[in-house]
Length: 460
Image 1 (cartoon, rainbow, N blue to C red):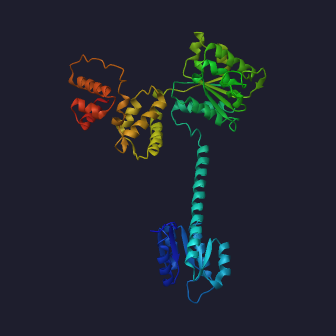
Image 2 (cartoon, helix red, strand yellow):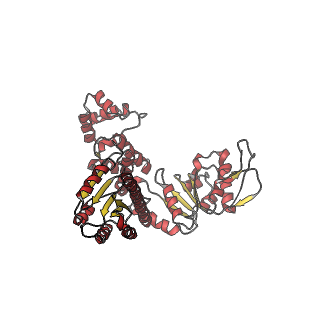
């Protein structure tokens, strides 16, 4: 079987012999070949079908050689589908008219009688042109979507609760300033996302955003990572290297987990922030830096100041404005939005189709306290999508949320209530088998279906 690389072709000509010959030739090369001898059906055909190439005769009456009908129907096709690729079929004497038709929007023309190789080559070029039109259209659609998304305020941050709306208001106020920002909140609440939102709305949005996890930098590498070093200044310094402050010059520097810094490192950081200049290890030459500083931590810095584990003068330097991100358990109104967002992301990633969540599934998500916040919710949705068998995520797909860590021993039940005892036994079986429902059911002497019903009954 020959390659069907010519796509879907429509041929319109009042010569039935020509139509039959063309179809016999092209059906080996095209995905589909449709023929039509009545041009009055063109509007119906073009409105209800998609063609890669349309072959259109210039004249449809035996006594007509003006080509007016060809021009008329070419305009009708273009009116319906401006991106239609139309090749005109013309007699040798109509070449001048065909050239005029090119100016009217035709893609090419072929002469009657045609050479088979020439016809196929012309159609191949036309199909490639159609594919380029489709690609341009796709790019234009993406561009429009990007522009539309950019017009939506905080489209990169999911949340409509009152607390999130208040945070959006604060960002609007501080973004256009160069004030230092301190973002406070538990792990997984999205502190870096807020930092990037501030940068993207600031006067430095066209410059670089540099993020640094202060908790991951050792004491020995602190100065090298942040301030840079000169080649040969220490054993592993094999080349000159700019520190994060230099890299972020004219942009935004985001220092995450700043509460993890020891007092000596806090002192070095404070000196740089006060002088707005850094000195690479191995040199004595200070380098001026112009940065917007945003810091974040999950620690209570004000309490640490009282305990003398965080410098008060550094806190004053970094918290011109404080933004507190509430934990997910305090913004349960946003859980459906977040859950559906992650469902869409991971369903696409794992090529699965889901209609959403069951009522019990969403109730469980809104009832669970989420100690790991949004990051835990994200991982929970991903895990559920991988393991789920239905077309909606149910509370049973999130059984692992209520399972206790295997390192914890389930408390010995002192009640004689049968339901309480059964609940405890089921919980212990699930814990023992690492959340594996099949193994837990087997150990309990139940079927998977029976165990699922009990899990739902007890809210496990």
